Image (cartoon, rainbow, N blue to C red; front, side, top):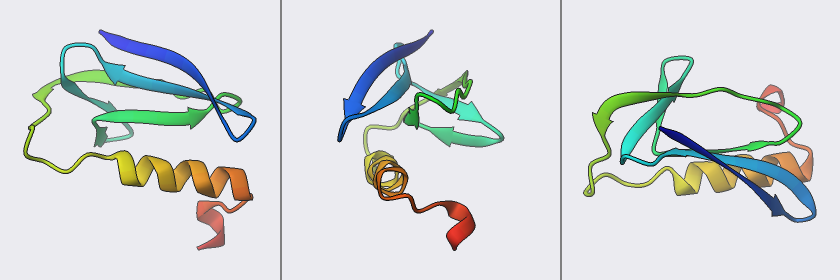
Length: 79
């Protein structure tokens, strides 16, 4: 089951989503171990049947980068 947790980073609201069963979550054919999205951009994820490998690098660095980009006003369109 996908768990949603509200959180605050730098005074802005975000929603963290992850599988409580240790599986990847997926959106638009991309798999994530967890996702942190701005609360004002609702995104829905589905749970896969692929377990997260403990030896694989976490998506944490990517998620922190997305949060930083959001907080600084940078977007993928800027690339």
